[in-house]
Length: 269
Image (tube, rainbow, N blue to C red; front, side, top):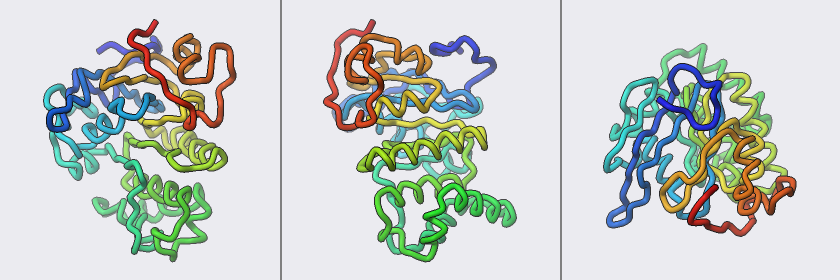
């Protein structure tokens, strides 16, 4: 299997998407997408609203069945499987909008992430690690999830997913609705999770600057297709990416990238 942009990859990717095609009724939302996530790497998928990013994650996670193509995890096909099968296998989605359980406490929300586990000591160890990473969750562990701020709910959603001990963590728009300060904090934790646990992470994000600065590899989608791929360093060096995603050639990455006006190109260099 070929890789995109980084010749140092060896072996097989932990998650591989090949020629994936997904429809929403009459709408062809994903059109022949190929994507690899390698062990221990953070991969970001960038693109405007309607590019197909969320559909891609939902198809990988089993929320949507693909029309054709394949998704393999550690060499085993998982496309078309139910979401609980995909999660039990080790691919866990943090959905757009967080979707915490509003009337359960923070502690109960976190424990819901470990529903498929029976290793009590391991669960306790992971819970303590999450409280260390997200001290505000420890402070609010008895509070209902629906009463948390947006940033705290995002922390809770990530923590809940980590309680499943995923090999691949899927993050859908983690910066949505958050301030630049909270966005930096969330992405700092994402990098820490990757560094300390070696969890592979696939993150869909509209804030191109912080996503490219945090990830190892990147893909850019437009209208359901991948139009550019490579290491994040390679993508940031492209004139197209500088102009349309980072505020102009030669400009430093902007922290308010998620508020920028996204533009489309028919061709990429």
